[in-house]
Amino acid sequence: MTQLPLSQDQIESLNAQGREALEDDYGSLGRQLGRRGIDIDAVTERVASFSVAIPSWGTGRGGTRFAKFPLAGEPTGIHEKLADCAVVQQLSRMTPRVSPHFPWDKIGDYRALREEAAELGLGFDAVNSNTFQDQAGQPLSYGAGSLAATDPAVRAQAVEHNLECIEIGRQLGSTALTVWVGDGSNFPGQQDLSRSFDRYLDSAATIYAALPGDWRMLLEHKMFEPAFYSTVISDWGSSILAAQQLGERCQCLVDLGHHAPNVNIEQIVARLHRFGKLGGFHFNDSKYGDDDLDSGTINPHQLFLVFNELVEAELNPRGGFDPAYMIDQSHNVTDPIESLLSSAGEIAAGFAKALLVDREALHLAQESNDTMMAFQALRQAYRTDVTPILAQARVGQGGAIDPLAAYRQSGWRARKAQERRAVGVGAGIV
Ligand code: RM4
Ligand code: MN
Ligand code: MN
Image (tube, rainbow, N blue to C red; front, side, top):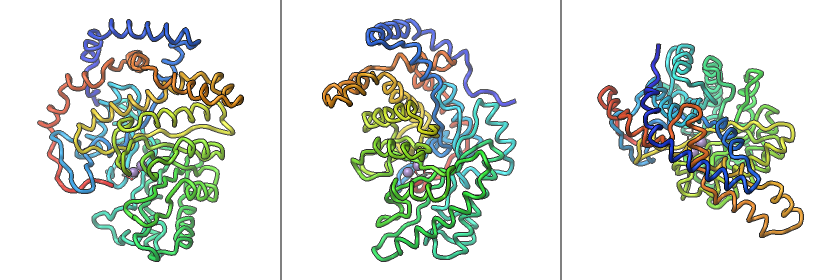
């Protein structure tokens, strides 16, 4: 039987040191919120039931396009990645599922992997296909595209890979396939912009037709990289058009780093939801492009505004609201476990703050065109320090009051540096 990576006693004894201060802070925040007509325990309960999936690739030091500086004790395969995900889950209690990426996480026995994960307290989230890179031994290259390639044999190979991902996902207990392709062009004229989209739609329809009845297909748009002139699914417009054409169970996935700078992503969220096409998120942060920085490091206000739309969407489901939340980040300079813990906290903070918005006041101000009071309704919630709520939500489920401190105390990475083989240097992931 697989052991949970950290001992619960160790977490408890660390929590004992911080419990009194937490009770004090939680009580004080509770009184403050009480004056605003908010029941803190109800908010804590909502936060406790919130979860976000961990990307298997986020447990390693992906690095930048140019360099990768491996960390001693970094996981080298899916089994070790799962163990690191379990550490994040044990401390945060907010990340009970892992989103795997194929063929990066390819192994022989997926049923056994599912059991191994379950013993670690983990399940699997959306399966990610990868036709944006060539793999060793692959018969045909994706150099000129995959699902939208002009060569029908390349398209067939890319479709086949997605079908294999669905099959693997079925064995893992997933119910969604996330498709991001790197297809696009680097030169004006290189590709026919309409016909490449036609070819994409055609290939995607074959994949969609193979989805099990309870599955969703999530289309991820990205305006650039690795193609820098055009990409086939460049923006939410192309994404929703494709999703509408493919069918009801095809929806759009918003990766926060995949837009032009300053794009109003919260409005995209509202639009996609309005038409039943908001399928999921890849949370990360960015300063310049698809930087895959930790959530909330650059623009926590945007994260809050996105959650504000999500809370609105939940209150107005318009025929369904069930987005798949995932982290998608890559690190070059931190311990990935610490970054994942930090991001999970920031994401939950965005959600908690959005729950604190006085919706009645906001809606009244909106209806009466009282701009300042509408803004203040958001600002008041955004300014609130929700740290005690997050800590209480974690502790209530056996997690850590201070996950980073507990992780450092655990000595996990140093232990793994002794046990695990070293990963190679090289360039990072996209
Ligand atoms: C892409 C995109 C995908 C992710 C890869 C690693 O930019 O965000 O979601 O699977 O990176
Ligand atoms: Mn992504
Ligand atoms: Mn990305």
